Length: 385
Image 1 (tube, one colour):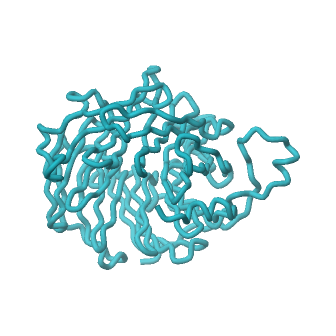
Image 2 (cartoon, one colour):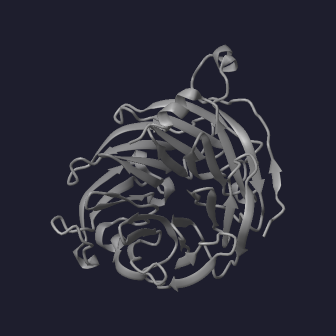
C-alpha cells in the first residue's frame, strides 16, 4: 500500500544557541541540512518513538497510530503501511523491532509479525490495566523485554515465544521505591535504569534516576518482581523532567524536559550501583525554550531533540561533555497545536544512521529527516563502541 504524503525537501540556515559572535555564526556552515519532511495526519498521529531495522522505520503515534516506512532513500521516505485505531492502539508510544517481530507498547503490549512489513499481522496482545499501561520505553536482553509504564510500574515480558509473549514480572515501583512516573528504561549490569520526571517541574520537584536490581547477581536470571530491589538513586533539580535515558559503559545519559520551559542533558556515573553520581550537566538549546524529549547515542555523540531544535554533544569524556552543534527548524516543525500556545514543543524521539537523523515531530504529525553535514559529527558518530 502506498500512501500519498506531503514530502518536502528544503535547505535552511543554521540557528546556533552557542554564545558566539554574530559574524562567526554567519560564517559557519549549518551542521544539519533538511533532507525531507514527511507529513501524514492519520499515519503519523502525534508520532512519538522511532526505530529502524534495515531500511524500514517503525513509528507509533500517541493518537493511536502505527506507521511502517521505507527509508531506503532518506530524501524520499515512503509510508508502506499504517493503521490508526484510537481505541485499540491508544497512546502508542514505543516500539522494538526484532527480526520478523515488532513489539509495540500502548496501553497494551502487542506482538506483530513483520516478516512482510507491507502486510503486518497482529499476533497477540497482553492487557492488564493495573500493571500495564502508558508504556513509554522498552529495552531487550536475551528473552526479556523491559517496559516502563508511566503510571508507576516496571514490566518484564518473556518473548521466548515471540508469537505469544507473556508478562513474566511486574513491580509497582511508584509505591515501593518512590519512582512515580517511569518514562524510559535501559539496562546496566543486573539493573534496570529508570528516569522519573517528577511532574516535569510543574511542582518544582527534583527528578530522579533509579537503579533497580532485576537480575540475580550470580544466576543472571530474571528475578521475581517481589525480589526486585532499589540499589541506588540520584535525585536532583537538573533531573526534573527526566524522560529519556541511554546507558553506555559506566555512564547513563539523560534528557530532561520541563513544562516550565528549558531542560538539561545530564550524565550519571553508574560504576557504583549503590551510589550513582551526577557528574555533568549541560543546558539544552537555551534559545529554544523547550527541553529534550528525545535522546540517542551514536558512537561518541549524543543527539537530542526537543522543541524545534536538534543538538549534538561530544561524549568522548563523559564527565566533560561538549556541545558540538545546535540547530533549529521552526518552519519544518511549525507546531500548529493550540495546546502549546506560544511554543513549539514538537521534536520528540530520534535515531541516527549513516549520516542521517530521523526525528519525529510529535505535535506536527511529521517525520523530519536531517542530513548531518558536519564531518566532525559524522566521524564521532561512526566510532564503534
